[in-house]
Image (cartoon, rainbow, N blue to C red; front, side, top):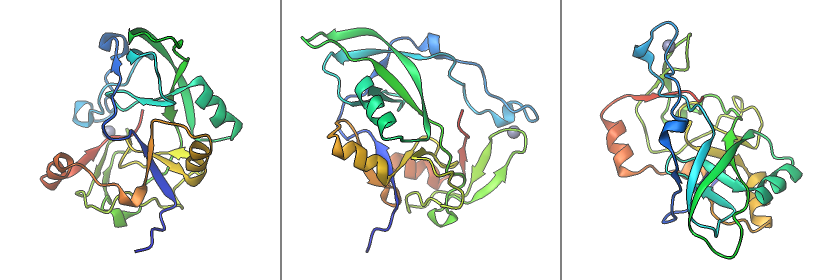
Amino acid sequence: MKDDSLFYNLRKPPHTVSIAWADEEVVSGVDNICPKFGDEHFLGNLRGGDIAIILPSSNVKDFTWTWYSELLVTDNVLQIFQDAKLTGFKTRQVTVSKVKRKGNKPVPKLWEIVVTGNGGEADPACGVALRYKCDYCKYRVYSPYQDNGIIVDPNNWNGTDFFTVNAYPKYILVTEKVKEVVEKNKLKGCVFIPSTKISHTDFVKNFFKNMDIKIIGRE
Ligand SMILES: [Zn+2]
């Protein structure tokens, strides 16, 4: 079958170490509840501050990922992204609180990449048809999960290089241009999966099999 996916999921390579936050308290934020339905539409906690991290080593790859799936990049990578005029993200400060194994190299400055680009609702063909949408907050209920990956509907996409779709706010989606920039510069610490080939873990599949997906909007 021809793969005509135009978009990729940018993610952590399997079997790589995730980075721990240094302090959960600092970043725990305010409750994000619906102005109309309150707790019934609880959307999780909004992160208040920027993150501080504990690095296992001063040998930092171009891309690193935290336990909570934040994407961190070095100053050098940010410069490359900016030079290539990649769009659809903003940066947040990252504080390195501790380095467990200090090497000879200084720790590079790190930035958190926060995806701001918007792909809107995914193509219902990937099994995430919208069933309920709150008019007062970002609460959404989608039809049960099917294993068709993420099919982006280009009509709903705002055209940025980095973006997410509403049903899968945790999946960083990127354009071919991002993949080319990363490959051309031989950047390490990430992989690209065609968005239509995303396969979820058995845990997630079993979870979704039994209930409607309740997915929250992005911060
Ligand atoms: Zn609501």
